[in-house]
Length: 395
Image (tube, rainbow, N blue to C red; front, side, top):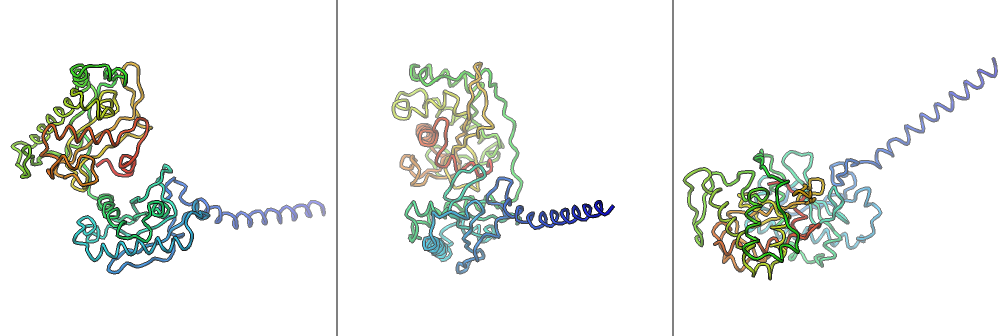
């Protein structure tokens, strides 16, 4: 009996020790696994931010933030971190002084859309892709945070040059305003495609075709695969433009503008695939229209976006099988923002002569679309604003 009591007491002591050890360890384990949902910019990382730095006149603060996965990062030294923070503060201080010159920035300030700015050694999205800037939603309704990549600023030579940083920051505020917007979005209209009957061709076949043969292929894709309208119906009740004219014209019917630009886009695409000059100077554009890489080219009206054109590629998990051979494709859509004008950074800026996109002639529109595809589509990969737009909503 004495032995039984002895061992019972011994095992009881061991059990209590084990429970105590688990209670001590578990908070550490929880702390080391915050943000395990895959979003490295979730609000749970706020505990690793430095104290905030004020910007004169602004309601938001600038923080130096380091997540668990980056706590040991030595890519940015303490001096570089301080210089980066000061550069961002100086840039925003200038923007505050001249806020009337930056409509999207002014709108964000008026709406209180930006909760805070966080500078990190590196900025990654959920999929592990690195970005110079990233706008992320917060748990606060109608507010977002702007994440800034310190290493990228250093690499681009922007540290201690706030004046050069300002134009880049200004562009980000279209995303700040858009992502903070809590109004309901238009639902996409289901577009029917006959994927099995879509006749896509290899690049070698496309090069061998005559202009008229390429146009015939395109006509077949119009019937089965390539859509030239906006499936969000954003052109409903929108005014339109006469070619070469800045003034807007009211549409007679709610769908008149949509039908008009459907025809203009088709005419432009036919010119791209038919004329030899496009195949010679912008071959990727011609190939992408006939090999299935592009499945939507359309005019849209997106008031919250300042860009004139945009290319968006479906992610790998939404790839489609096309044709009888079931070729796997990550298709892209090319969007043309009806009321927007090109900016100097756009490759087609000079040829638009300051006109809004909706006022371009068929020839101008064909060149704009071709240049957009040529510069933004790389088969089996993404770059530039194609990659950046993975982070934005569909509209």
